[in-house]
Image (cartoon, rainbow over the protein chains, first blue to last red):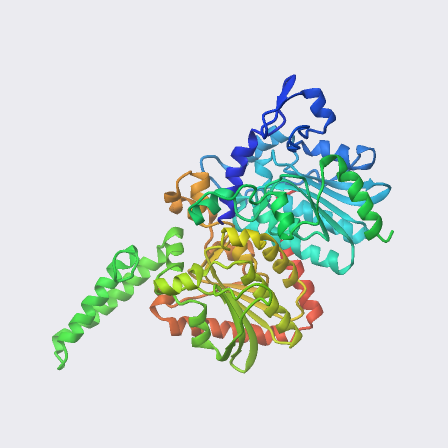
Amino acid sequence: MEWFRKAKSGLVSQERKNIPEGLWTKCKSCGEIVYSKKMEQYLWVCPTCNFHFRIPSRKYISLLLDDGHLEEMDNKLASADPLKFKDSKKYPDRIKAANDKAGGTEGLITGLAKMGGIPVSFSIMDFAYIGGSMGSVIGEKVARSIERAIDKEIPLIIVSCSGGARMQEGVLALMQMAKTSGLLAVLSDKKVPFISILTNPTTGGVMASFASLGDVIIAEPKALLGFAGPRVIQQTIGQDLPEGFQSSEFLMEKGFLDKIVERRELRDTCISLLKYVWRG
Amino acid sequence: MADGQQHLEFERPIVELEKKISDMKDFSVGGNIEFDSEIDSLQKKLKKLREEVYSGLSRWQRVQLSRHPKRPHTLDYIKLMTTDFIELHGDRSFADDRAMIGGFARIGDQPVMVVGQQKGRDTKQKLIRNFGMAHPEGYRKARRLFHMAEKFGVPIVIFIDTPGAYPGLGAEERGQAEAIAKNIQVMFQIKTPIVVVILGEGASGGALGIGIGDRVFILEYAWYSVISPEACAAILWRDAGKGPEAAEALKPTSDTLLELGVVDDIIAEPPSGAHTDPPEAARLVKEKLVTTLKELTARDTGELLKERLNKYRNMGVVRE
C-alpha cells in the first residue's frame, strides 16, 4: 500500500539520526555540538532543541521499568518465508542481516515487568530491525503480549517504532494488524488498560492498528507519526508539506494524542497513569 | 489499455476474433449456410482461445483484470443482485465520503447492511468517488453503519474494491490511521454476522479497514495484499515499472490467498472475467452470499464472535 513508501523514505532519512559514535555528538536537528557523555546524561535528547535521538530498545527498558528489568519472553520466535519472497535479496538473507545488526530481536522485545511496583505486560519495537516493520513474528509477539495482559489482568504497555507492515510477508503482514487489533478488542472489553507509547517514527500498518488503540496514547516530542509517508503525500498533492506536518505536536493539535511527554518524564507519567487505571 | 476500445493487451486476440464473428453474423443475415458453419467453427476456436488465454494468465495480468475499465463496481453489484437498496450517507461528524457507500438492501429475502468502496467509471465519476480511495470520514461512516446493523439485527455484507486509503493532507489531519485501526477493532465486537467479498482491488489498510469478517471471499481475478505491486516495486526495485516482478513476489492473487487461509473461498467469475458478463458475475456472488448468510444467521452470535477472533488470531507464519 501507499503508506509503505513512506516507511522506506523514513528509514533512509532517519538512519542518520541514530546515536552517533565518538566523543562529540552533533545534533542532526539543530546542529549543536554536545559532549557525548553529556548526551548520555540527557538520555540522548538535545539540550538545545529537545530533539529526541533514536535510542536502542534496551535503553528504554532500563529507563522505563523497575530496576531496568524485563523478564523476556518469546525470544525463540523467528521469521519464516511463507511467500518465498525475493527482490534484490532473498527475504531469509534480509532476516539474517537484520539479526546480525540488531542482535536477534526479530524487531520486538516482549515480556513481563513492573513499573512503580505495578506488574505490566511490556513490548518494545526496534527500528534498527528492517525499519521496525511488522511481519508475522512481531504480530505474534504483540498478540502474546496482549494475551498475557488479558490472562493476568495486568496493564499493557507497548512502545512503538515502525515504518509499517513488512512487504516481504505480503498479505500475512497485513493480517497482523487484524490479529493484534482483534485481541485489543478483548482487552478493552475486559477493561484492562493499555498505554500506547509512540516514538520516532510510527507510521503505516502499526499506526493503523495497535499503536492507535491505546486507552492513553503518549508520544515523544517531534516524532514522525501518521498513516502515509511524507513522500507519498507529497507525490499525491504535488506540493511540499507544511512545516511540522505529521509531527507529535501536529497530532496533538488535531486531537489524536493524549500527551506529548519528554523521554525523562515517560516512566513517571506512565506510573501516575497506571495508578488511576489499574484496579490491582 | 490498448486503445479507446477498453481492453487489455492479452484480451486483444479474443476481442479481434469476437469482432470477426460478429461481422460474419452481420453478413449472414438472410441465412447463408456456408457462413453459419464458418461462424460455428470460429466460435469453437474462440472458446478454445479464451480457455488458453485465461488459464495462462500471469499474476500481473490478473491484477490488471481487477482494474479492467469495464469491471463491475460495488454499486453495479448492488443494482444487479439486491432489491430495495436505501443508501445512507455521512459519518455524522465531518462529511459524506463518496468513495465509501452503504445502506440497507435485500439479498433474496434477507435484509442486510451493505458497505463498500465505490470507484467511478468516467472521469467525472472517478473524481467524485476519489478513485475508490476513502478518507477517514469514509471509514467512520462505515463504522456508523456497522453499529446500526448490529442495533437492528441485520447481517453486514462488505464489498472491497480500493487502490488504498487516501494518502493526502486532509486524510492525515483527520486521522486516517486512527479511523482504520478503530474500524478493525470494532469489527471484532460487532454482534451480527459479517461477510466480506473482495470484488477487485484489496490494497492494504484501506481494504482491511472494512475487511474483518466471519467469512471473507474473493472473486477469481481480484487481489488482496499489504501493498500494490507498483508501490512495492517503487520501494524494493526502486522502479514502479517493475509491477509484474512485484506481483510475482507478493503473490496477491486469489489462489495464494486461499492457500494462506486469508480468504475462505474463491468466487468464480464468468469465463473471461466479470467485465464480460456482469449479470452472471453478480449471480455467482449472490448465490454465495445467500447460502453463507443463511448459514451464519442461524448461528449463535457469541460463538461467531469467538470464531471470528480465532480465525485472525492464527494468521501468520512463524518458526519457534
